[in-house]
Image (tube, rainbow, N blue to C red):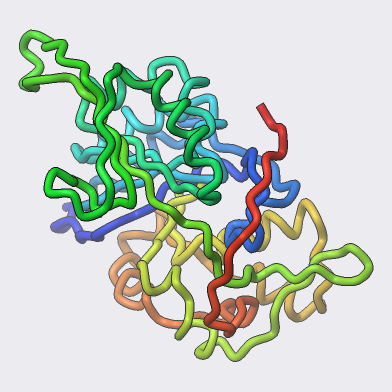
Length: 303
């Protein structure tokens, strides 16, 4: 008999390592030559099983740049169907007009797109992209506006008033929030003089105490498994592709983290979730410098 579902406030479904921007100190290493993405149909059945055990209040799809994943809309519609919750796609905003069907997703369903803008200088270009993507005239709200829905730095509402019979929606509009996120903490990855990549060697409790991922409770689903955070999930994969310059003992530690799989949930799920906010030994690889700095965000030219 399946027990009552455990509620989690928010989970980020990370679906691709690939990004078209190089943002300094990206904490998921997508500014580097990090490859690999996840096809929805490969994991759909796993997530159907997961939904028997956990309930999620807020579902976010991200990467990398999620709109570079060719199955991103399958992820959005699939997760909405499985959990019965509206799904947010968190994008850098550069690919809005490259995904067929994206406007329909945000205007004809309650799923939505949020934009994390990593360079304020790109805002005028982003507004041009939104003019192509949305139905003009477009209303722009600044932070603090009484009509704001998401509390973002900017919000854009279009003028589509097409009513879909039987949809239960008065109007089919796209409403897109934009958050300015152009300051990052140092990444776990260190650039070594010989061109190789290293990691930090911190006191785990100290790194955990200043970690913004911890503070935001950014739990991750990756390839059908639940992780405390993105970095601990991605360390082994990045190491396979780029071979960190670390000791054998650190490599063993890096690979020793055990995410929660659906097969293990009945016996390990409750304990895993009760301790998910605690420090883990792999926090050693993250920095203890609690200092945000303005980043440089450059296009890679990936299309």
